[in-house]
Image (tube, rainbow, N blue to C red):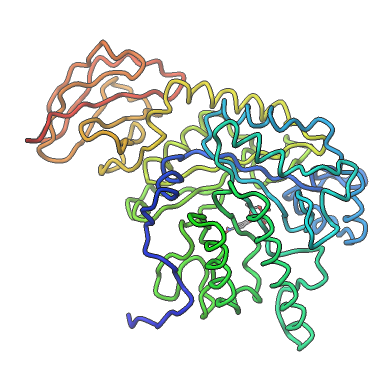
Length: 443
Ligand code: JFZ
C-alpha cells in the first residue's frame, strides 16, 4: 500500500519506553469509576426502568437538558468517603484508577472556572475530585482522568459543523475543552493520564490537527502524561490508528467490553487497555442489576490474566451510588478479587506476554524481572489431571510447582522437544491457580 503523508498523527515513537509509560505498563490492573448525576436516578425515570446504560438515561428516556441538569441540585454524596474508596481499591489490588471528571452529560466533578455546571454548585460544594485524587495517591494508586469531549450540556457542542454558526460554536467548544483540560492538569499535578471519550463525532474527526495540537500542549504541561488512542484523529479523519495504520496516543483503547478474541499474539506489540463492566453495558450506577448477567470474580480474574498474558492492562469499572457509596455486590467482588491478588499478584504486576502460544488450561504470563521462570495461570483443569505444556524447542524445565506450595515439585514427562506433561498436580480447582515453571539456564 502507498503510504500517505500524515502530519497530525503520532507524536512519538511507540511503544514509549520512558519511566512513566513503564510504570503504566507494570500496573496492569486499574479501577474505572463512572460517577455523575446519572447515579441519582440510576436507570429509572418516573417509575419506568430503562435497560440501556444508566449514564445514557437522559437520552433513553428523552429527558430535556433543563430537567436533567437540575439533578445538580440533588447531588449530595453524604456517604462519600474518599479514603474508604481508596482503601477498597488498594485491597482489590489495583495500581491505578481512572475517574470520569465529566461524562457526556457535561457535569464536572471538580470546581471549574469555565462552567457553573459543576460540583461547586451542588449541595456538596466541596472539591470532590481533589479529595478523591489525594486519597488514592496516599494509597499509592496512580490517577488518570476520563474526560468526554461530547457534551450534552454545553450550548456549543454539536455533532457536525454544517453552518458558519456551527463553526463559530466549535471554535468556542475547542477553547472550552482545552481550558478545562489545562485546568485539570494545573489543579491536580499528580495526574498520570487522560482518558478521552466522546470523540466519535464528525466535528472531532474533521479536526485532526486540533487533537494533535492539544495532545502536544497537554504533554508540555504535564511531561510523561499518558493519553489513550481514543483521543485522536488524524487529518484524514482516521481514529485510534492513523491513515497508515500507526497507533495514535500512547496505547490502544479500542478494547471496550471485549478482549482480543481469539487470543492473538499480534496485539502484544502495542500497549493497550481493555475496559470492562461488571454487568453488561452499564457504566454508571443502575439500580437494577437483575437486568443482565453479572460477571463473577473468577470471570473477571480470567479477563485480567488474559490481558496480562497479551501485554494489556485491565480497567474494571465501578459505578457508585449518588449518595457516594458502592453497592454491596461491587464491594463483595472487589474483596474476592483482592483475596486472589493477595496470593497471586506476582503473575500480574510487571508481567506480560511470555513468548508462547495460548494453551488449553489457561494463560502464560512472564515477569520482566525474571529470565528463567514462567507462570501458568490455570482456569481449565484437564480431565486426565495432566497439564500439557508446550514451550519453545530446546527449552528444558528444571522444576514445576504450585505458587501456593513451592516446596513440592511436580513429576515431569517429556513428550517432545520442549513439550511436557506435568503430572501429580493437586491444585485446588475452585479458584484460578498458578503453576511456576523454572527453566534450565540456556547457556
Ligand atoms: C463510551 C461511553 O459512551 C460510555 O458511557 C462509557 O463511558 C464508555 C467507557 O465509553 O462508550 C463507548 C465508547 C466506545 C465504544 C463503545 C462504547 N466502542 O469503541 O466500541
